[in-house]
Image 1 (cartoon, rainbow, N blue to C red):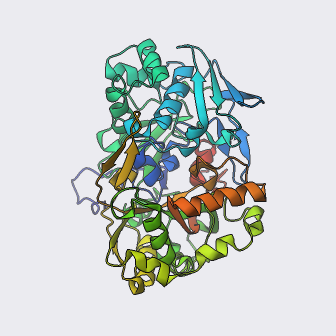
Image 2 (image 1 turned 30 degrees about the horizontal axis):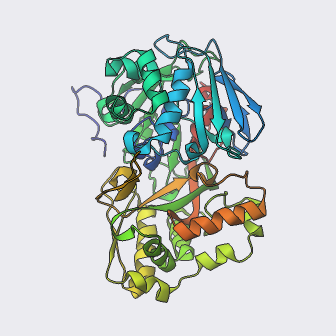
Image 3 (image 1 turned 90 degrees about the horizontal axis):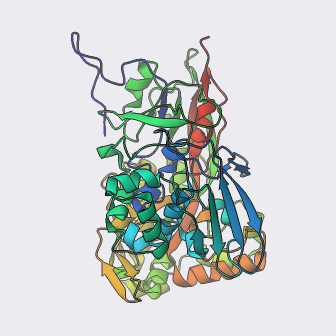
Length: 517
């Protein structure tokens, strides 16, 4: 979405001409629900990190920082690990209502019922049940036998949403919602799931639903898709410093915004392509930080249609040249990123170097193996427009062409994993297929959160190798390369700490402070 040009004399100023603190993200800002199929495909956590922060906030060095403004956690070891979450009694939503265990129950149940809620929280597969007396401040998560090693990555940013607001929108009581969630009653939850999935989309901003417990709340969504944040007066922690932050989506006219002094922080694809960043200008107010990020960019594959079978997905993976894809990404971003051949751990994790030849096997191109899919077309989408991702898809097209596989860039703007052809197993055990418009989605993921079959913390080579072998057998996704990150930061803004995970540089947005000098 491109911004209009500056208004002529006598016209009212557009929103990018009025004075404001601006933060531009490399996302379409489609939804604040980071657990929805749309949210995971469009990196919703970039916005929702300080609206709905997680029980643990991931710091810039990968450390998991307890967010006691929301809740504290106690682990009870055993065959069935239990985690008791005690919600801070002062934790309140921006409508003044308390955060309660029903919010955690809703988050877990929505994640466990992906067919009903259209959700994507793979680690929730390891949960056996959530104990919650409606309205109380204690939620106990009980894991399946020997599961839950990665429990700190559950209840992540943008995944714990206001159950009371969703219940009210659905016309039911919180008690009734609690019962339906405990029973996993797909019929009773049909309307709830629709609200959970659609009600947090920003194109139809609903202030009654978009109440937050973090340091900021959404005040409004503007004409260009920009989201205006203001402090949440009910936040239990330290008040946000900046009284207003406007978050600008991918495709905004950053040059116009910066020209008017309204762009302080930006997460961009490549600084060289931004006309408003001039390192040779002595009056240039910006510093540039270029990082090889911690996230892995991967192809999330369809589970129906041409890629229904593991054998078909294996054949497609065999023609994907990760080295060429990484080079394409590096060329556009200006940052040299490595190819990645592991799914379940971050690419810089030392255990990835202890897996022997397993990653190397899957970084190699095997045209003979790929030719089993000859004559087929693979449609790849991504959150666009995005020059770098387009170059990555083009590299895949070139490497798969000799195998007789046609790869098509099918990106048409914002994307959702619901665009994938998919097979869903019903609660009665039968398969149901849905035809989508895409066969793969190119997106950034955190390997620590992405796979329900991963049950180690990434420090055990044997366990990691077993997980990787299983994932390369089933091929739900194809890891490609590390995600490059480019941040442009106004020197007058303090307390900015670069972070390349799902929350991005805005992970501590409430501490940002603009000096008047």
